Length: 252
Image 1 (cartoon, rainbow, N blue to C red):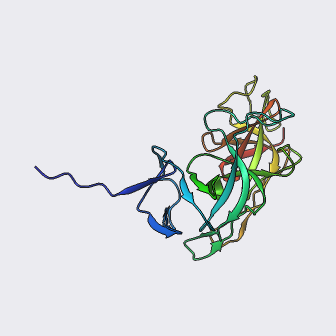
Image 2 (image 1 turned 120 degrees about the vertical axis):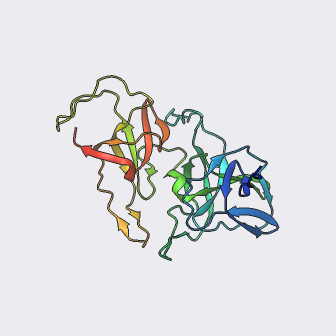
Image 3 (image 1 turned 90 degrees about the vertical axis):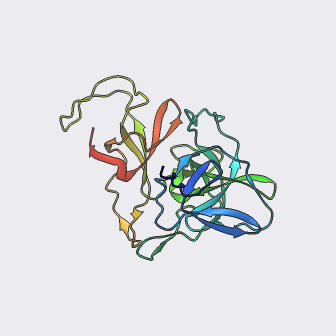
């Protein structure tokens, strides 16, 4: 009988599995760093371990940012922010940033997040770190959903990252000016049509050049379901969506 071949070794850190990764030692702490060409598509959920304990100076690498965690928000004083579902965004303040991702062209694209920003980010793929006895997470810059100023996020204080838009799901669907027939009814969890209420800066390509978003506040768009993170602001439902996931636009 032919012996069973051994599977490539993978390492699990902070609830994410990364195969064929480089292991980097920093301040006596082992971190798993994906190769440059890693896109994140091979990350798989696995049992979450304890947060790495770090004392001293911690510097994120590549396109990672270090976020000092804040308790998960269930509501704000004015009731404006209610993260929904098991994929609730996490909130915190950016305390350190990496130099940026290195593309296959050799160009290093700087991260969008800046030190001092208050941000919401997705939970998937984050690396938990207890840094100087406080809870932090290492998050990819692309996983930052939005930033805000002031004590709490509102439509007036939100800033969207590069290549992302904030969509307000349609509460009442109707026929658009372009003749697209939409069923009427309240917005449902699987709704993939929304109105653009905030637009981030243009995304950068592999050469570090801007890619025009071609979306504006007031546009109605159809977007792909499954790649966005759910947010609630007030009574309406909102989504933070990559502009590249928007399929078509029209004016309602």
